[in-house]
Amino acid sequence: MNAQDKNDKLNKFANWSLYVFLLSVAYIGSCYAIYWAYGLSLGENDFTNWIIACGTFVSAIGLVIFSYLTYKNQKNSEFYALFQIMLNEHNRLLEIITKDKDVLYLTHSIVQAYLDNYEKRFYSERYIDSDNNWQEKEQHSISDESVYENYALEQINKNQLIRPYFIVLFRLLKLIYLSNKVDFEDKRECYGLVRSLIPANILFLVLFNAVQFNKQKSPNYVELLIQSSFFEHLPINQEWITKQFRINPLTSEGGSVPEPTDKVILAFEEYIFSGKFIDSKVFGESIYLQSYLEGKRQQA
Image 1 (cartoon, rainbow, N blue to C red):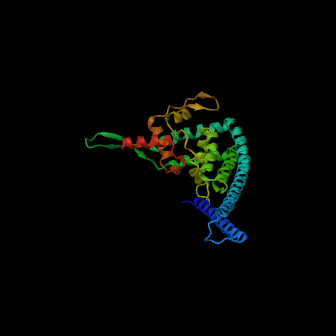
Image 2 (cartoon, rainbow, N blue to C red):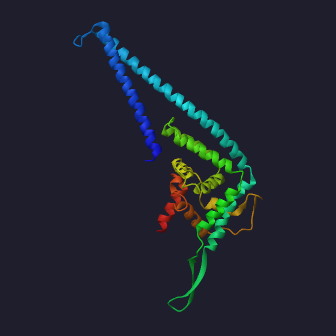
Image 3 (cartoon, one colour):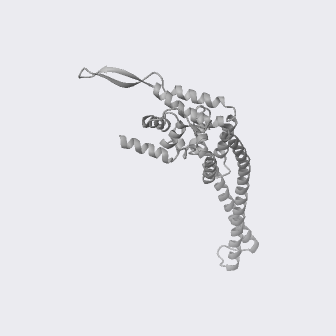
């Protein structure tokens, strides 16, 4: 259980404790008022006066419930007013970057770079087998995924147009996560709304951008992405990866880059989903993650 969940439970406990206290006071007060106002004794069985007592208590309950609903609606209104302002700004920036060819090219170039880096990660080593024949095998070289990650982050950080969007998205997710004015189900609805607005190529850039902030103080970008299952609908599969290899968004035409092999695509999926690059919890109940895991089980 994280700190935010603990705070939410403490707030709920405090609120319910207050309402129980108010109801108890109302009940005792109503009984006390009727006892002294009508000169009742506890042993009498006066039906009319007991109806009055019950009516007074029910009125007190209604008053407390009304006060609670008014308080809750006020808190909800405060949250949704601020959420709407930030969501509008998010949508404005999102519209700008989705129309920019340089931003669109970022996804293509980062995915395409994996092919080059993957090929460089392996070299051919010759050896003599038991029959004294020369054979070749693939061996991991000194280079690893850190080279690729540094390249991807460098390309993202160089683009000044997308930086404001990442900042606003972070603050929007943080607003939802830290708010104690809405319950868990309302937060899930807000997270789902934000996710549904973002196209896959921008989700992919958010994924890489977040990695560089996973050691910042809580809540950091990765924690917010986990809480919101942010990449549940990011289509990391053969069709989407092949499309990124094949199409150059700057020209909208097929390039001369080689078609990715199944081996490279599986390696890319492993890189994204394995949990080494980023905590796999950010994918929530992704069908693409489940498909990848099922493929791994079948290979085992």
